[in-house]
Length: 367
Image (cartoon, rainbow, N blue to C red):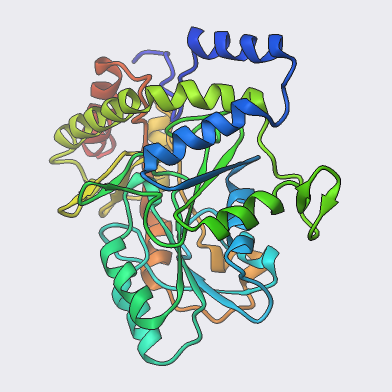
């Protein structure tokens, strides 16, 4: 057994990012400025969206997007309970009510059939946030059809899905707005940061104003806003990371394919990718079959292999949302069984083999 630790995540930052940061520092424009505008344009183009608005992180991106879409008190927003709590918190920040729809057991994303049943029953739904969990796009074709039929706003939480596609169309270009995170563990990073993409000029204008103190120009302010701006230093990192994103994605997909081969006979269910969808593997998440998830995690820890549980508790089971009446048995079961394995671009072929074989040999070792 080697003592070398294989981490669950490893930001890929190098000389190009350092050089770009140095250039920004030398320019003296280290807060919001031309570097941020450049990153916004480039990221929007990457997503094939008309507008991009950079923010300080993924949570502020969600909050600002909902504000820009006019979501507020009296509105009701549905989303998945199997996500990071920020998705629900962003709704709460606007004063709107949040509700939860159970997930598809194969994709872990919001279940369109469950959502449609609620809509047919006449539940008030002003917006739906579809989370592309683990890097796999939600069923945007069905969700877009439902949004058109039942007249609700559709928002993508693409915090984990930079570059993912549905029938060749990149996430970030569906619905009314999309939100990305550039946290260090994400598929690309700015250290901290977020981005909103939209094809609606009026939404982009409201969002850009909201993230800059409600500013119209100079010291004229049209509304109460926040300082949710991205810095030029963060944008400088992001512009290089965006150029490298295709390379990162290919590595993640290659590592995932290798893991799936190693785990063919392992006591776990490997990730499923529906036809027409491109998975970018922010996480490679398995579901434990007939074995204790936490026991497998402890075994991998003892073998110096990092893992993650995303997420051990559904959002509606968290204290801020326990007062809500929610039926989400599929999400609750997933929270008890999922385990994410290292898949990031920093892994060597030997690392991937070690992870795969260690999981595959688990039953032989413990029985």
